[in-house]
Image (cartoon, rainbow, N blue to C red; front, side, top):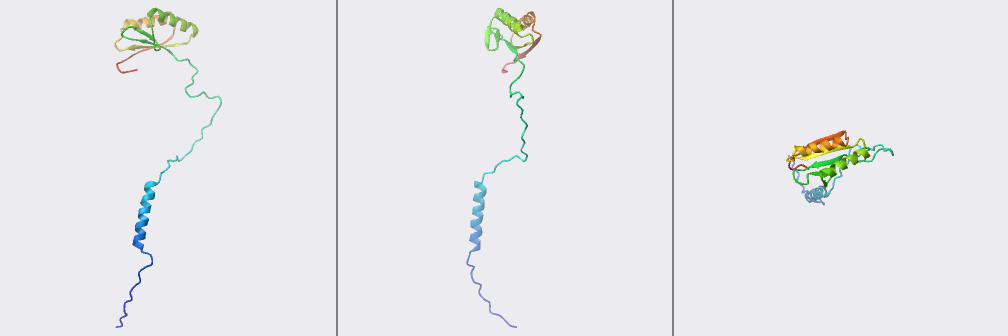
Length: 141
């Protein structure tokens, strides 16, 4: 048997273990500091037209809102308090200026029904055909 003497291996010029550690630290730093953009997968370009109505625009006039409260003053047109006589005249004026006007009657949960019926009667006398009535409970606006 022929035995060869073992040669000693020379140390590499670059220490690989330290290089791998530094690369892992750099990779973790890049992953943490990178910001990702959220890009949609499909980009849509919608057609535009000059004749399209703008958002929020409508051909119809907003309805006239009458609120019936349980405490005095009992009647409100929009946010403005009115008396029963003033309400009747306002309904007549509004109906004469617009024959197709809409009237919305809101009543508090504790409001008396006779007050709501009075508003409905005033609307009938003013010849308003589009009348909607509803009650609102406590906490609703």
